[in-house]
Length: 146
Image (cartoon, rainbow, N blue to C red; front, side, top):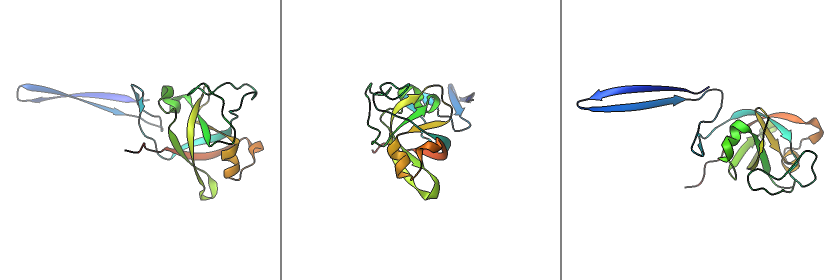
């Protein structure tokens, strides 16, 4: 849960209000379509299909399109998806054996908790068998270039 503390400081005649917010347990702070950058967030990586005809699937939330499972793309749990603020953004995924992959956020995994739904291409590049179903990873936001 995020906590907010308001502190009033009197400086001469002026009254200055400071607002301090904190977030716990790796949850992003979302403000008007923006989010707090996250680093090394523990998550479960699952297999996600992004192609048309996938069981229970539909077009990606970010762009309303289907995508090839050969792309480096992911869906994020709703709290990390941040109301679409991470659409099109890149994340860095760190898996076992010191392997790292950069992927683009294209979809929300509604009803998921602490999940990164990854395309088959990502699983193959980590040399993982998709039939395993899930593995522990860490992910980080890739900051936009200035």
